[in-house]
Length: 119
Image (cartoon, rainbow, N blue to C red; front, side, top):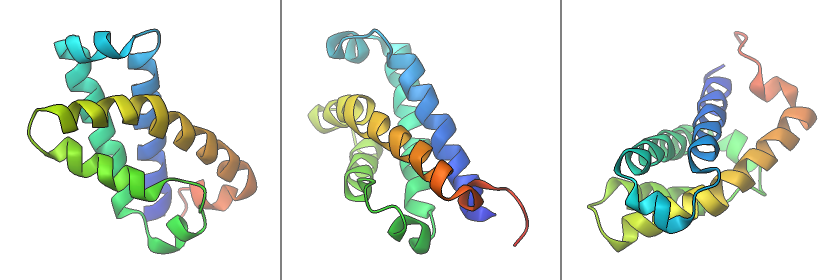
């Protein structure tokens, strides 16, 4: 059940990132103080949930870029600057869309991973 809750957090944060960045160019994302802050917050939620996911679930999803999520999480936890900007853009443009696609595939293949039932 813990893994399902983390996957749900990742999905909800991913939807938030995609919704907030839809139609925005990279420069617009970085220039918009409020959108930038909320995208960073959603990406931090996503990367923290990914880091807390049980190893057996991560190992069962080899196509997900776990290393990229971890690196983005580290950059998002750091100070403002180029690394944070790069993590925001990479997280919004590459990591999140790919993750959402794979979570949809895994939800179909392994629905039990996503069920919030006591084990």
